[in-house]
Length: 424
Image 1 (cartoon, one colour):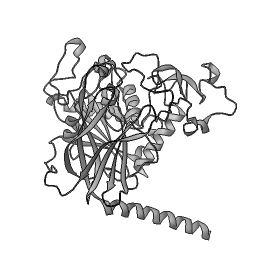
Image 2 (cartoon, helix red, strand yellow):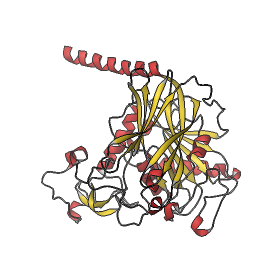
Image 3 (cartoon, helix red, strand yellow):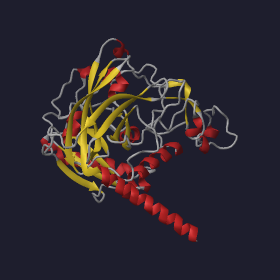
Image 4 (cartoon, one colour):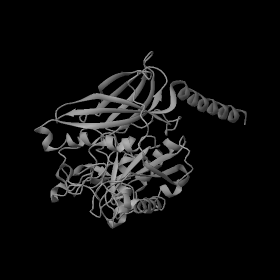
């Protein structure tokens, strides 16, 4: 009993140290770090644009440095005096996806990027790193010395959006703050937007494992009107004056719905606590897109809008990879078979022990055959990550492969891991 009490006291001291460490280095405020990514298939560079201070920080002060290594990029905050790592966050981007398309071999492009950080109290260094797809190592892309007292740190008033708390207490420090942002809803359609968000929220909390962690979430509906209803559909010659500029036909794929200008989204969200962002587009056309720690985009009125929401949130929130391989995509060699992908639900077997090896039944056949006997079994099913050979998924049918399925046990574990990161 005495040893148990000492252990508990030690844990308590660690928690106090974590809080003290956060308070020593950061304010209860957000640093919006705007930058450009520019380049082509061969190379890229990151260029600082501006720093914006916003009141309040929605992150967990105990979770400044994750134990998991997710994302195609990483942004870090380091103490300028001793190089101590104070904050780290992995993320992915639409630009990185574009670099794997044929167009990137022909031209250069520039993409608008934003990442949110806790606002430093003292001078720090902000590093942006890129993941080498052939080695999975992170290499320095941008090093920026940041002075929180710089007169050019923007301190503009928040965007005048209407924010409605639909679920949760509103306390942010130990919660997942999920923000739905209206896109392509006219000023007369605010009630429709709130109804659509309520429907998707109900769907979320009917779905495992979210249904077991409802108390960990705040859900906000953020409404600002568009002049026109719906998104752009370039392949059909349809162009709309929507607030965020959402568009289908991304990279020539008709169902890929994205918001290329991320700064518009974060302008609307200024001052709104947002760990996870879902842009809800007012359309009955099928499509969507989700990018880890960046943006997820979905649809309001299609019969599968709820399924799309859950799938895209799997990407944007939990860092899950696509497990399908039958559908056409614009990417070329998105994954190298010589290295282990960072996504927790796909593997090339290069470093499988850090994936779901501990969840495999003893003696299961590998590769696991697609047979009725294995329909509800965690295994190694070949095909995933947009290719039929060399990448393996943990379940024959999972929501990250098919809209008709539930999340498999491996994806459930990954989602719960992310919820705990924000909430504990």
